Length: 172
Ligand code: INI
Image (cartoon, rainbow, N blue to C red; front, side, top):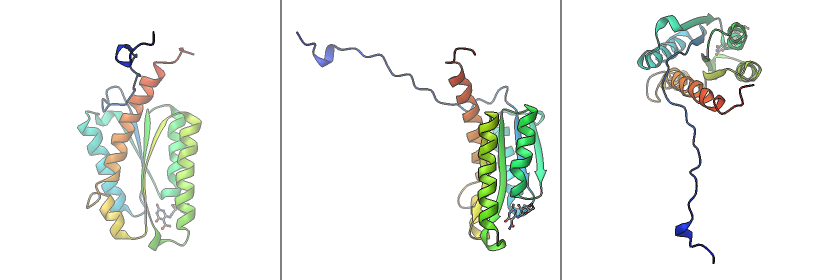
């Protein structure tokens, strides 16, 4: 006889999700000085988020670089040290300012992805790419939130998620 659907029991699918528990995590903040009036707010936002989540200043390394193009270079050097669980990239590329906007945007993003892939480390990207200064202001703490704050929150969640996923591995 075919069982009625109501009689069939299914094991629940296991869902894994990162939480915002930042205990035992260390972070690298890599921030560019170009458009510093924007990037300083992103940096402050990232530090505020980590502080809210209980991360002590002693667990944070803040690395300053000239421009967004240098962010992946410093991120790579930092990843190589093995010091941190996550790197948070903070910068501002504004189209109005630069003829090589596309170069800076593409190289900074692809450079960060390469670091993430090569070192299997969490890298979150709060390098703003905007058409105008107003848009950059909006995304660094005005109308559209603070992308530095968000990137730090995402970094904590992803480190925790990777730890949980790793716990399903075979230990090799
Ligand atoms: N760097 C930025 O972070 N934002 C910009 O908007 C920008 N503009 O406008 O050119 C910029 N340029 C500098 C670049 O990141 C490098 O520092 C420079 O090319 C030296 O390598």
